[in-house]
Length: 147
Image (cartoon, rainbow, N blue to C red; front, side, top):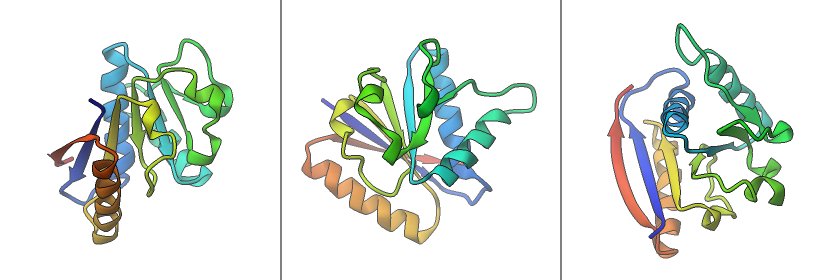
């Protein structure tokens, strides 16, 4: 059964969604799994890129933009408008959704990670996505995260 994991960030930290997305992508990469991380717009993708390049004090998280896919890369980032059929043919193991909407291409993935910040607007948006996934028959799981 297809699964959506909602990661609820319980504290307010600068760039919390991007940091958690980077942690998840790094973990998947170490497990030899690939992921697609999508955002709402090119500016958000640029911020995510910045966080991934400064992932921790001693290293960065290797990744590609959707415009420059390379076969060796396990982590690809871009906004939801830059996801093309070519990108979806890559058979990513996990979709990490940082956009405010349920991606139209969600059924291409066995597992989706939804990252939700602590503010009320983000939670309200996540509730709508939760109901949409539930109506589509996805298995839903919740995880409380403190960064």
